[in-house]
Image (cartoon, rainbow, N blue to C red; front, side, top):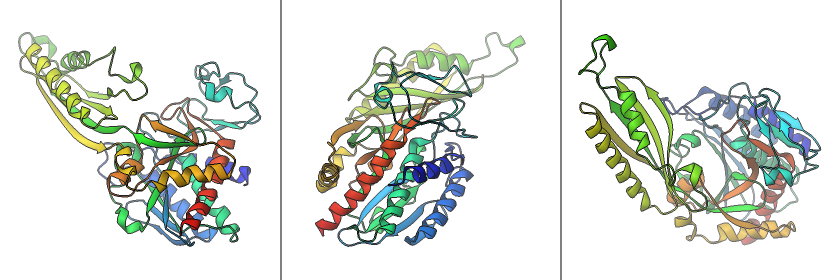
Length: 408
């Protein structure tokens, strides 16, 4: 593999702001996703891939021809709206020496190996961060770069065995709309792989099941000089509502492993109206209904405490635990393990406390586990990736293409 080419490609991708916008009425939700998709589509044509398309919804499609069962490689073009992705200034730390990394754009942002054992284990490697003022965008531009580099390598080495590989880059995965405009059956694939995982050599075989609640709290606004007995302050009611949610349990700050949580992550508004967004997450899909009932109970209690306020809770489905669908095609995971073993590496079957487009695809009939691509600290200004881990993911995909070719 060519690590420098992979790095150059990745740095080019993160320079384009593709932050998803949950309030947009367009698809994709932000213009940068179209810009990046158009650029990658042109790149795929120049590499010699077949059937390259960039559709009206921003999805990028391409084909690496081969023989055997067709498989899918997927990554997403957008980045999380939780941290800015505008004007990303990546910093490349070559031959990492094990010390704290003080990010130059905001020196209060420090990556400490004492707090991050994964970083401490990568002394001598090449680490890429942002400058601390934005996220980096490795989630999921590392996945994009890995897939494009693997496809380029296969095209450049026609002697290598490979199954037919459908490539699909989606938009708005971070806001739950990655496969809204994708029919999995149209891909003709028997399995898929999302390249959207942390570290190296990990196969995510389970995700959260996920819903999102939008809580609208309506009060009564009037000039504060004449507000006595008349104003109902939606901001105060919102504070009361949030205070009724679990804090010492069932929050991201207090859970790990297979524990679920409720996560209020966005708030906006004023005296007349406040809107909250709350994530509902659990590996047991049935428990999402229990979380929704907890929100309804909190709403009722807040309305009792704030007469005249109205608290409306609306819950929408986002994705479901991909473990529920992977059993339909056990080769999806087994062949990914075999591809790693052929490289002399040991696979680890893991769970992800989040979701991917693979959860949606699996739910809709295309079993799609998630593979490591070197992502760390996603959605944060402390996000980072490792070039060598990305290179290992490229090697993994090339090996995986060969395993599936032999399955034919």
